[in-house]
Length: 616
Image 1 (cartoon, rainbow, N blue to C red):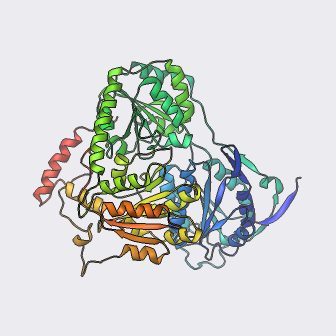
Image 2 (cartoon, rainbow, N blue to C red):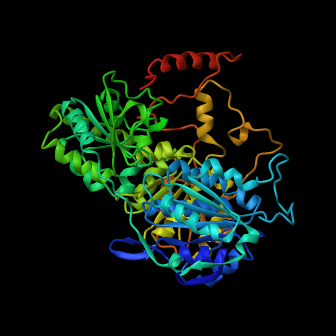
Image 3 (cartoon, helix red, strand yellow):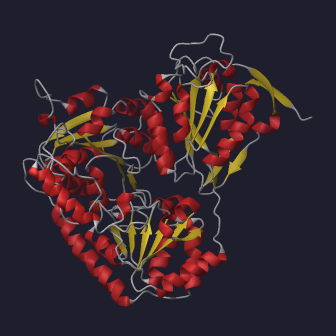
């Protein structure tokens, strides 16, 4: 029998995590960048003590909100293209359930996240303990069962030795490109403190490299034949291109064949915005250059995308009745969606094999030149939308233009829910792969500042610009204080449109009255006059207000040279969005209403639904 070492379950867990490694640019580094922890009963005594002893190998970071620290961990993993990750621990009860939203976000976006919530006593002697959720019909349930439907792998550790197979399974999920997503190990608080003679071999260093499976030869041949027969081929680049590190292979395929490329929210920055064959954003928030090609495309090579409704315009965008979809994806579930020809492979490997199989074939030159002409037309429209103006309340697009001019494309820009994703997807000119960081899979308000913190941890030498609306800011802003505490500088641009402007515009477009979105349209005794700059300053940030686009650009220049996190606040118009580009999105309108505006919107809705391709 091999040598053993006696440790508590919590000590075994933390030592194991500290010994996992990966390689980045030829250098061997820890796979786990650290553990985010807010301690309480359920994790402070045992897991907290264990983390203290490995704090030099596996640093522990303290945040101010459990959901926010999980968001930071997710953003860290995304900024590392899933090559590195973080763990997050909380107490039982509300500390744990605060992380469920973040767990769902990681699940939707296929990002690695290790959650370690404390749980009730396995021995049940003190039951019910403080914060315990009791089920009248099932004594095995706890609040942590909420994680089950949004975890790729869930386990409850009720004996110390169970951590061995649980961690083995967890690592397989976290590091597998196809299975990748959140893992929840629910840690019963008494078991964390119990000791066991663990085999020393369990704690040996292990180097994890991402699996890059090659495609089935028959699937490659089938996909190549479809592309050779295409008269109007189009490539849709999703987040899988970035996670695979496949930007160079994507460029080679596009340049070798003349096939234009468009990008999902997750795939934006797969190619530089300036690349002549990059038509940029596709779908509901897409450019006219991309969407007009999508309407006609007869073969769509969908690379590393799950084909969400914002990409497909609720399946009313890809209208060619003879179209064929090729699903190049490491996950077979995604590769075969909508009757696609599956090409199950790593994106880089699959693209390289397609280039070889196509053997110098090129798309019709008229299609390629038409695409380039459409790109030039779009660029002119985008420049007009983002140009500076002297408007009392600028548009989001004008703010985006100011940030782009002041900060350039060398920064990493981050945003999430609300109106900004639509405008940023169309208008931001991305540079290097991963420099555009959008959380639009789960469209989670409150991700922005915490996510920016995670990106800065992953890329400490890059300027990280967070674009956030007043609604998201009010939901979750506490990690400004964490960024100051950790010396991780962010540049935060806060667009104050005095409410939920994006949903207000959607409400208006469906014929409804302005109701409960903008602050002025809510039930109130008096309207709040929130001084966001003063609030940000109270959290330790440098903060100022900009009264115009010109002042914003000047303030951002100061922020570039500031020593710590800076927040610049600018008021914007809640009713303006960029009219150019875009596409219909299926938002059902009531069939019956006392408002004529709603009835008219329903008629328009029914007409748009006729363009959807059911079953495609």
